[in-house]
Image 1 (cartoon, rainbow, N blue to C red):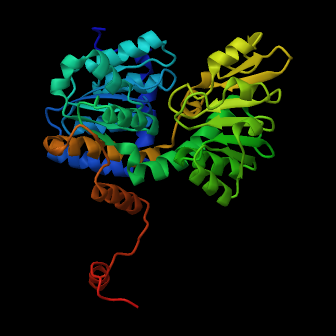
Image 2: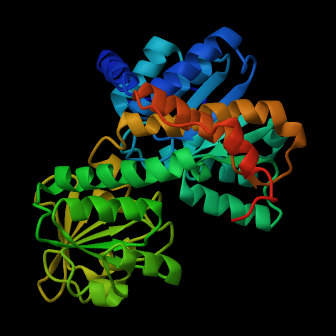
Image 3: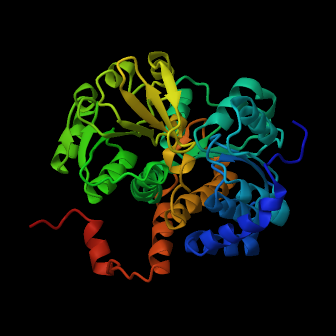
Length: 421
């Protein structure tokens, strides 16, 4: 692809600009970073290829990187997550090349990743590791330019750690998702709210009184379970990790194997990062009318091919976000958002105020890679704790929240071993 951009409609730019500016009001930490970047220009001359969800929050990250002197190109990290007006605005108002169209097919999706790689990045910025994967598999001639990368989400980090374990990862990557100011807040509060938002927008169902089955009990699933419970659902959690299953029990949820939960659930939500978490043998015992949604990065957590083979007919009873699969016995199962990220397929993703911290991590991780890449090995790293804490401090300051600091006496006590009871 040789075009300088590929988006749906540049005429959407004015609307996108307003929405980007609205989100910016909720992103004070990133705004402070951008102000510093404008003064110091720490990323001057750096080429960054970003494969992220093209949303209003991402637009503010791109503008921050650009303010720091970086030459940025953006493509989508999911075919259904692009906000077309935002993509148009970045091109028209910020002169940032964007390759992303909501609803693009797989061929277009990967051609857009190819276009982002044609930028010959010094730093990759990924959400799901598709950019890094394509770079390592098909564009190895570009690896000599790459100083390092950053990764936004759990699924991508799983892939990158597998690459590192096999010796296949050829540059260092910062696991932004592992920052406490990312996964404790974005994953839990962002995913929890936006997932339920997407399901409600797609279906307009009442959550109260329904049995909601949440697959997994990582940080994203914890947020989903918490928000579903808060809306009045009876929540069942499924898990494969005994420690997480025990934690779910202690948090007040019923824990069942998926095959048992499948028999009683009304709404099913996956968020595990693994394949076929809801499989055909689960769907064979679900109640007619069951709703199935995914909040994991890739559309592999629900066995969609298996369900399609089981079905004798398919209908769209409400809108493009709801598809009914009619089974031979007359039951109908509803899949939301084509099994893709429901919070972005049917809603607007996480609120800007929580993405403020996530994208502050991304911006500072890019700066960290530039400064430290020579000391980093070909591995997956967590952002330094002092950066994580500074992001939290800035967020609290922006919220008007004051907190204690240690006295010199307390610091001395914590750094010695002589004092006992």
